[in-house]
Image (tube, rainbow, N blue to C red; front, side, top):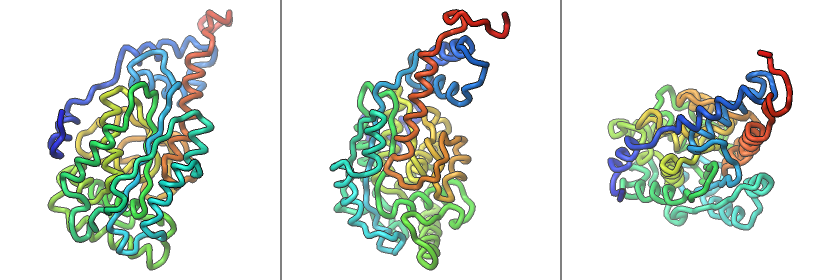
Length: 338
């Protein structure tokens, strides 16, 4: 399908495939046979079943985890919402490409392929307090870039971002979609405090008020308040679902980007897990709003898919136990019914 409008994206959401129930049933049937008390591996058991359902196969695999980090610049930075200047986005992309960032180390240690994509870094989005952050065409183009980033033969996709000013966009999206006050959703980001934080809160409040009548669903919020990297994350989530690739969302910004799909059509994120709870104050509230539960709580707030890359280890452990453990019959161990 050729995408030319956000309505085309909405149509895609209506036709997303569901889970493979046969694969999930096979995982659920194997679990009680393994040499352990029922439920003793906790969420690892549920993760193995979730992977089977969304990979569409049993046993589940974790041979090819991949990470995709999208970068974008935001016009709202001119309002003084960040402790760092916009040029840091490009500088950090260079750092990713040279292997010097935290995400490089985490991907390396867990065998995760990493690719980074900058989106028009020389052309920031519009200041969303004065105009839509992106035109519809710009938003769709960024969604398409994200959709085209998901390769075949991917066992799990970690999604992250880099973009000075994008916690402001994330907070505005959440304020627009889930209500409450701008203060609830707006945190320090890269380290703004005091008067600068109050300015950031005002920018979030003013931006949402400016676009309120034009935001009917999550995709409208993405176009009016988001950024190119957020739109690319949303696109990658869509194609991952189409290709039966489970997704690990990173922190506040990545979750906010994906939440625009859930706010457009409930169930759009069923193939996703939130990897960790960010220290951004709005993240836990957002996780609850989209009916998720984070895998990890590590007091992280870096972004760049770092929490998702770390959570790959959890998935690897779940698959190793599910696939490798002996059954009671194989081990000659009496189970509780014998």
